[in-house]
Amino acid sequence: MADVALRLIDDPDLDALFEQVRDPESVRMAAFTAADPDDRDAFDRHMSRLRASPDITLRAVTHRGRLVGSISSFVVEGDTEVTYWIDRSAWGQGVASAALALLLDLVPVRPLHARAASDNAGSLKVLRKAGFRVVGTEVSYANARNTEIEETVLRLD
Image 1 (cartoon, helix red, strand yellow):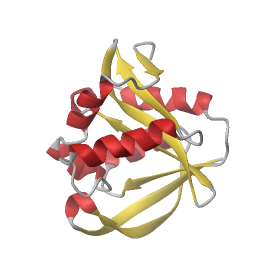
Image 2 (image 1 turned 30 degrees about the vertical axis):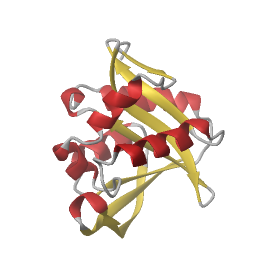
Image 3 (image 1 turned 90 degrees about the horizontal axis):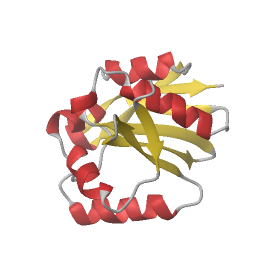
Image 4 (image 1 turned 90 degrees about the vertical axis):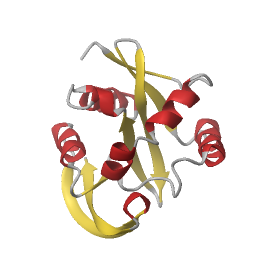
């Protein structure tokens, strides 16, 4: 989708990204979020660490020139994982799929891993469309739901 692009995150993007990660429906769907999505200081510290790390690929996602989210890859316990957050206003338009395809071109590491709440059908569809396959499930604590839930673990070889 030519209407979707990735670019570095600029300081002026932070206000919009903060608002996106506070949307109650999006937070519930993502499940594995910050302990307090409304804590701007924690958000700013987190984004500062991400943007400064040479081991993290972090990009803003734009759709038709408008900032609609973020996408990144990072290493956890030796595995490179991908994650993304797309503003609810852009759901169902192919934005996440296009952004993920662009990120996969930027990040040559394979295998890549991803995780999503098992009831997050939209995110699981995006990951499968990109070639990720389910390799298991785990039960983990989801801050947004204040309980443990099943998380699907995926891998792209």
